[in-house]
Length: 153
Image (spheres, rainbow, N blue to C red):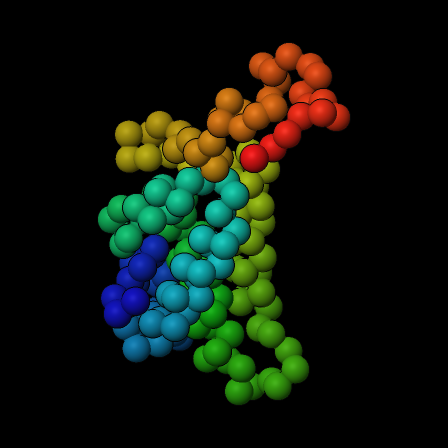
């Protein structure tokens, strides 16, 4: 994880920060990039195949919707850490708002309310990569599925 841009570019992140107050740089975004990468992959592991998730190696190969989510998360982490010194107990409202938006969008992807598309506008198919025919018994198997005298070896 030596790269400073994983799922979102610095431009994606800076779109959520005001340049006159705070700017994402390679130095202040390295750990937030990693944390956003971990959170997004963890949240979407049941929605996309491992091959699909592994193909998102940099901002150029990452779908726009995922870049937008990652940009929000990274900006939230940077904003929170920058302004944490002002209050030991309160998370800045803007950082919390960005984080909540990103997590909500991830939940919408998992529930099917948001669709991740590729550069051509085609939906990226999710799932685990397995079909119901990969397992037995399944809905094509004639009952009874097992009998008492069946031996498994």
